[in-house]
Length: 615
Image 1 (tube, one colour):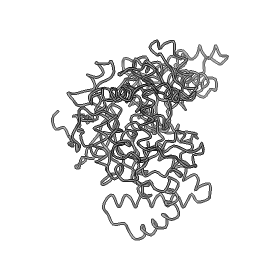
Image 2 (cartoon, rainbow, N blue to C red):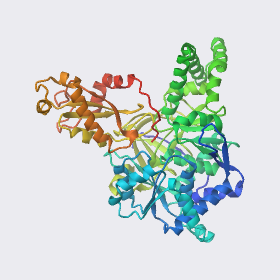
Image 3 (cartoon, rainbow, N blue to C red):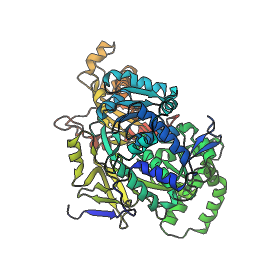
Image 4 (cartoon, helix red, strand yellow):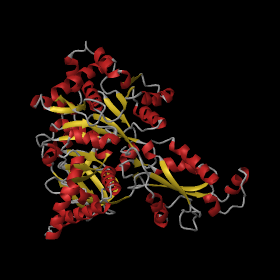
């Protein structure tokens, strides 16, 4: 480790090894019992009003549900699966399980039945809570593979109310005893993340990971979280560590939290809730920008919007570089502020001052555009293994294009090859029941992220690439290519396949045909056996067969990970062409470079989606 670059910031809050996550709520209720900690929609209409739930009311709900879990036979340390969308009930269940001494195992609500089976069986879950009948049906599909599961509770069928009613005879003292059992070093939750092999690994996150990170992050970015009246509308999945961490931090910091699981209803919900900060992935900011541009285009004002965007970006760049903004730019900026920027601010509720962005790089263009709208996007960097953030830009000082400085209590260093390594209050304990993977992931107490980065002189980190092959979509979804590629390659006419989609809005694939197997398949399907690869690649029947292989692969992954588009190439990848190793493994980076044009072509035709993949 010679000449390594390292930045480490001491914690600004003394560590408390005995504190657990329940203390954050208990302390909040003691300090401000009547503070509105949550707001829930009054009606289905996202533009309707919101009803506040105070800290004291939330704690009462939590204790009542915790009693129900105790009455149902849940013991301290039991693993409980949970599959649901982002709602008030998600955090209610989360804290009720903490108070009952149990350990939640969140499952993405888009997960396939096979993924649900793996996570629940590997974790040793003894019960599972499902939000909808559809979620419950997915669990039922694999129930025979899960002998440890004793109960499946379905929220849509009134399970939470029934549990609360069943727990009325459990004493308050029993809940108090159970909530105090966990020390800071004990497991708080088990979150599964995609490994390079495609099989999810369970990350053991401790109570201290959440407690110490929440306490330090709140103070280091006090303008965002510790300002009176701070509020946020959560819409990315709380099964993801990013939103899970913020939902816990909000309770500690006294931030009012609302939820909107349906991103199609996001704009009306923002308008009625009026948050002061947002938590989002880059795809959301792209969607806001693209929607505004298309709306302007449809109204014959596309030219004005593009001019406004250009001025916004130029204005923000000049300010960040410390240069004087020319008079002409200032005049245009003031004009466009009334015509364009103000309307976009209003569309986001009118009060948003900050947005915390993670999971994938945002890109300077959008960062500068939103900065000129009066919304400072604070990009951060982290993984499930770092309880979300390891670095994040500060409200008091941010640099667009970087992921900010390290959070207090955290250290980041660069290995000789530029790999980002992290240690500190946020780093997970281990991979569940996987000591080999845990040993491979650490160099001493430094966690090896697999990402490549660089620091500037002030300690602001920039992520420049990744060593691992995990694809991170623009929506922040981690996708392991092998889980999709292997089943597709099993089809007789497929030679090779490479899944693509890094920083793109959806997953796609490049496919080559197998010249040895193809003639027989063509003949069996009533087609000329001597079709060239180029002609076969254009054949509707061949395309249909490749689609069938892709459909099979898609069944093993969530919707957010599934392949939406593919291109059949008219050439093959061989060792001679430089695309395969002597072992006939694909040289992914070479293929991505050589076929960059084909990949870009996949994404040039706009694809309309009704939702944003945020898993």
